Length: 150
Image 1 (cartoon, rainbow, N blue to C red):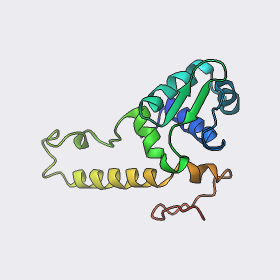
Image 2 (cartoon, helix red, strand yellow):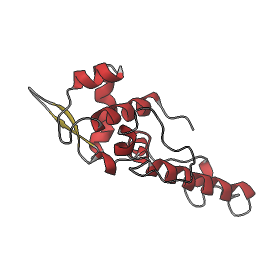
Image 3 (cartoon, one colour):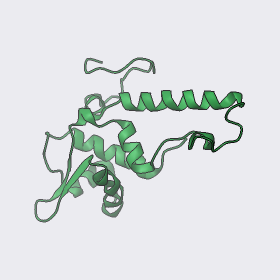
């Protein structure tokens, strides 16, 4: 799975907002400049995040965007799901019974386990932790749950 450019930029925008004081409105132009995103594309990518309750917006003079939830409560999985929808690695996982081979295919169980682990890992990385780690020094052991002290 390769995330879309929109999802990549959405993650960068949320990360930028996570580094601002809690509840502060961040100007669109500041996010665009810091993350090298065009204003039109930023507006487009933030719409699903607003709909998902991750980001809020304020119109008018002094308007901009803000995190609707605490960065510690927003995970990589939340942003990916808001941008791309449910995460599936294979068609056979989309719906029970979608694949006529699911009951005797030795790979079906592997796909399910890989998907569950993948989603669990994405849900471990919250934006408070990511924002506090500007050098990308989070643990590389995927079985380790990051903590605020990591």
